[in-house]
Length: 155
Image (cartoon, rainbow, N blue to C red; front, side, top):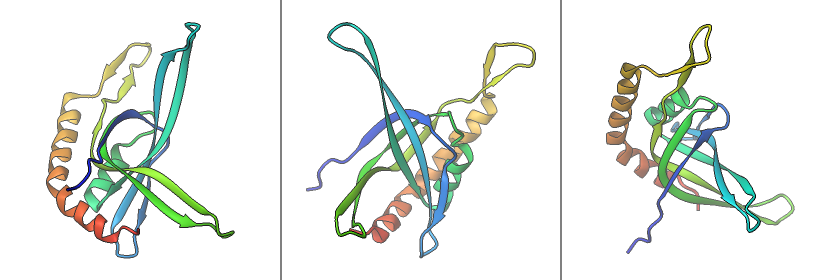
């Protein structure tokens, strides 16, 4: 029986996503996100804790969608799984990195500033519908992409 490995996380894109290609030609897009956690300590002071996480999106369509819509500062909700890469450093020490492999990404609406004013308006409904349609199409292709990514994974 497989063990449960699933994560749902919300945050903001830290910088422009980086797109690379594997030796086999599969596109992988890495999008760093920041996640805030607010809490109060024993004295009642508000504490803000920020965590930074790398999110990988595999496949040409999924990676392109992340690259296109993953604008710095934009809010995202990522559903995926945790993965750990392990390697030996040049001096022989063991090293590892844990990251999130995205299976689904929702982008929060972009806000634009109106000319001559401070009020903000949400992204147009048609842009949101276009993005949702693109996400739905990508979800259908995700099963094959995940299988391909698993074949290429280095353990």
